[in-house]
Image (cartoon, rainbow, N blue to C red; front, top):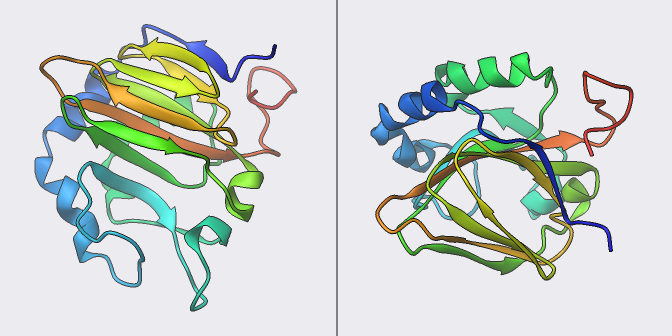
Length: 186
């Protein structure tokens, strides 16, 4: 059986990225000030750097290829430096996500035309979390960079007893090649 996970690197020093996020707690509420967005305008634990931009009325964010950099994109220099060092020059949507202690992301599949052309990656910054994809589970430690199959049912639970989970999540178009070889990232 093929794994629903690809662990690209572990034990990454994410301290500079995490310190920048922790030094700006007010930014977790910034999304509520954005114009022309859909969904929850005051979500807990969502700090987008690149997000869906719905140009046409009635189009779901799951089905739009349009995206825009938020005002936070330029501010978060450490994650952009890290991506550049990894040779990742083209990303689609990207955001920091936070889960409360004992918090979870419910079981779901990322559906729609947007997701059918992209791969999803995580870089864990703080806290430990259990990640489940289609019957396969892993405990994710801070400093772990991984891909997972978001086209299958997946969910996450923060298992840290005393800290919120913070992770950076981003999408890469299928046509983007890994800089260290000629194949796709996965």
